[in-house]
Image (tube, rainbow, N blue to C red; front, top):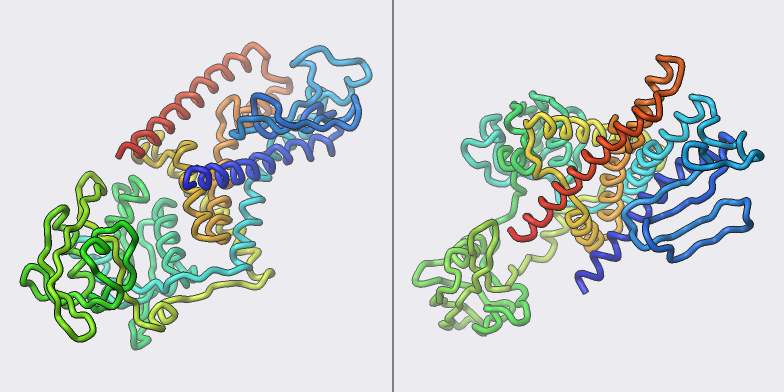
Length: 453
């Protein structure tokens, strides 16, 4: 069921993004007077097609949903009937051809704006960006951040939720900003501004940057009371029930839930002699945590969650939404920021200053699609917006075969006053195809490696 869920939302996301991209080419081509023979979503075997008559556009859905194409009348791709020559792509003005090619990635960026706008208007509920314990030696510790401080803004941008705060910090750092201004307030509303100093080495990847920042969300100290017991878990096998208070483990007093969690983690497949309190009576219980591999090490898990006091979640939550008008400039700014961050990350990977682990292939994208959909509509829309930005930026890169490569040829044509010869175009398209295939193979390799890890 998880596989079907992931596959379904992956197909939905890619289908929408590809459809918008190809619709951009299609819509502008039609406006420019170019005859479009086929509008296809997907490649390979045709699953569905519709054509009003022999002279109209054929609309196609194909079996492999990893792309699409718009086939236009073009003398370079075969013989063209005399009556169709005025509507051939290659006979249009340089400006018209440039607009048609650029429309695909531009439509992806406009889709990202629309999705970010929808997220802002719908609104989302997140946790307040209150800092937990700051580890020594981290960037946060060096900047003087303290536990309990709430992040209000990053470089002047309001950050009402934890995800907004961390996302803005990371994108600002990748964007090349070395001194990031972070406004915070304490529990007694005392405000101050801290400066995070980010070096180039810190931005090798978002994951590395997050670790070096040293920010963790604040969590209140909770009693070690069992809230929920999962079926087929070590907790259930040991006889633990909701409401049980963990008093001690192997003779060590347990004062809070995090202490119990850390003890369980360090005792994978090792029996823990536990004392619990149930209905005012202390009882001995033997719990053997199941060993679970995480990040190349094995940790103990018992399959139980903490009992959260009533009202605590509400006090830590914040709802963030904007009016339709106020959300519009924010959506454009967000799309621009992510576009710039994407270009800079690609540049760093190209010159070896960022890890290729930042690449995501279809497997990773599918996993993210399924995970974001599980979290709700807003998270799924944000996921699609981010992928739409990546798709738009990637297609604008000056690599032959991609839209950016065609735009590069058009730029040379504008300078020279005549088109680049077909022989040169074919040669560079072959080079571009080899580069693109190498990139895809590398991304797939990284995906498979992550699965095995």
